[in-house]
Length: 284
Image (cartoon, rainbow, N blue to C red):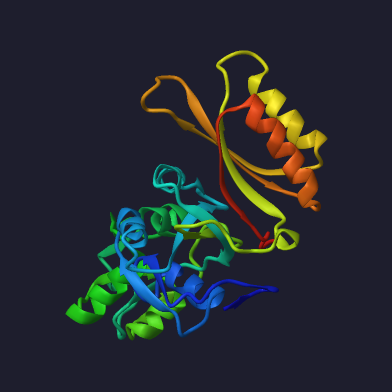
């Protein structure tokens, strides 16, 4: 199957968090094609379980948002289950308020949606203090529930595709606080990427460093000296060792040889060094 300028083995099914009409579903359609079978999972734990048990060929996981920041538990899931990032996709997230047709915003008493969506739209709802905001598992799943139960006075925050699939009326489009709202999704598999080295220009890495002055700075200097660009750094507490942290970083590069040189040095300097994925930079 062709993805951009390179080929991946045929992928027939992919696990997504949410149901059809969710943003993960949209990514599956755009990254692969409309023929891909999307296995619906209401939690990221179930997404990972489906991939590990070979119920699907790949998985799609949101990893960070331009407004709300990193989705830290997903870093931990990828790491702890020894999964491999083989690609990424940035999606413009447009949140829409939707309900059964024939209603207006003044009729709405409760809005259900994913906590991240509620966070990204909180400024909009300050104009409607009588609306109760309730956290739910998935954006599109709420839209489906409203459609199936023909629930009045209840609204969902979801994609335009969800409104179309579940025959809901958009009461207010693009209600997110910051209009340019992107989420980065990663494509995850059980094995390493099959992308040729000359196509790889981004990598996700994980490592620990000694708890002493300059340890992290030394690693960052290696990244800079080897002509790698640090695009992301995220710390995650090591539960088994209080006040110690693992670091997850993303780097981009023009030369795979520069990257290999950096990796060879970092493996010596850092502890528990791990390559989470090597893939093509979707921002180019």
